[in-house]
Image (cartoon, rainbow, N blue to C red):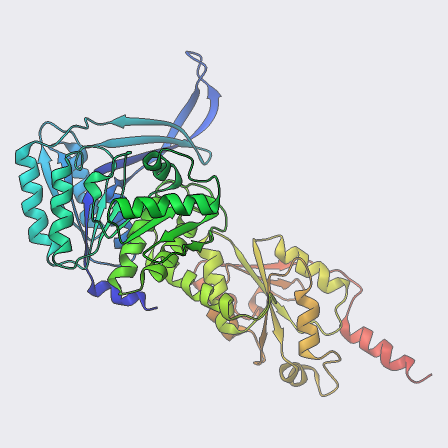
Length: 487
């Protein structure tokens, strides 16, 4: 799959746009005025919310995108336009004096949301505003590969005529229309290509529990799909993954791919944006849904509303392909696999540590150094000299243990996350390829003797020397073994 082709596609997002503000701070005391925490604000950030976050996800994937919605003639609206332009999103925002820009302010401390303040005046569109949106839509949609309708229940789709007009306009031109729904009445979405509810949203429409059993959930989803004339229905189920229902009688069950969940806000926006991107690339619906599931697993590992990026998704695709082709769960990796895994770990905020050696006859000194190295970060990669490399460095009598066995022994250690063999005299090329955050060697080296130091420091990494456990040496062990053979 080649995501780079997305820059040749165009997607139009229509819906309720809003400005998400975050106030980041520290809490060190309780207010004397009321039993509430006092937050000392350290930083403020602003991102597009609602349908704007769908557009931001598409922009993050480097797909040309336009956003059509309503904002007020106010400071928040001006700020929202500026943010869209900064992200490369074409803002087609219609101003309304009667409707201030929807703004949600979240107070954050210690990685948690303490409070949310909403500023909004949701109301049904005036006829004049509806006509302006319709005219702008018809002008822009004809140029697009996919259209996304992002309904947050704030007014833009509360009149069914507008929504139905947009869907009909696209349908006769063969443009897929994806809908992120709101509310219990989906009449206004009749005839859309696909709707992407979460479990709670599906339950609102079916009037019952959608999670009683897999079969009952699928039957409910299939009935809803037929009732509203949908080609597809993609149900997002949080930790239980997704279910895709189409014309055939068997659902596609897609397991969740999240590594660790920090914040689910905005995950639905990422799903529909990535689904749209996949369809723009002419992927089949099942493949586009699996791509969306992969993206959702990345964004729930972030704090706050943060869109997916092209690099993150590309890396996840490579990693997914590599894991699918793997015949086992071995920690021993070739260079290309190592590079992909390191990018995946680093994209999720993990610190990658690298050390290297021959590890010929593993002894407590090796174990000590490896444990110290692992304690410096989240993942430890060990570069291991091949047999050919060891012979060049230490002579024809070495190694005593073959590279395959040395790699198996080192990879069996719990503190080691990956072993990569290298054939050169030094691990410099390996270090330059995988770009670890921290490079570790024993303190029998000086800093100016550490191979790869300049490379690691050039991109902001660290080099550390750790104390060795005295009294252990592979050479001494080998000499002792040799001497006993004379008796």
